[in-house]
Image (cartoon, rainbow, N blue to C red; front, side):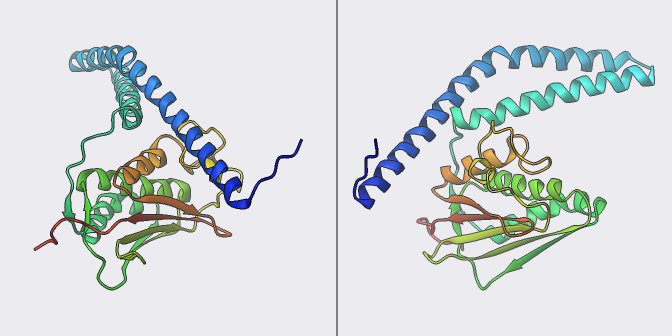
Length: 248
């Protein structure tokens, strides 16, 4: 049976179904995050503490490397659960007017050595005078860092990352992060920000980085989208105009 309605009604129904599906995914992640935080974090803390305790008295180089690896993996698992908690218990944003260009430069500075080691060129282009944005500098920095790090990992070695900042059409800010790394297959694009999607290409969006960036940007009332040209990827962050007094 085919049921057809007016295009507007059909579109509205599709949008409603999409919203319910997205909410169901968020609810499932909340349940998982709550369970993981209680049931997994405590054992991870014990593993890390024991490994650090044994390291203090260990002199054998091979055993030290093993204990250091155990400690690092425990900390990595703890960080992943903390990222997951973004969906269950979003942070209280400390919003204030901030200079997005300055924030981008700080993030780029922190990743410069990694780019140098991989022979990756990282450029920043500022078009005109981008407006201040109303946001949490720490959280937005985490989001931008995750997106640039994703491009670095996708490139591997020898490539270019271009970060562009300009005023958006609605008076807010538009930040674009483009790279010339591997493209994104059409079947992957709709899921690129899903934290549990397993079909991503190696090096492009693995882990929680892109999901974390998407969550932080949407908490700010903005949007994060991806374009996939013939080669590489372009991530677009749009942030609304600030409603707070401008930076003095």
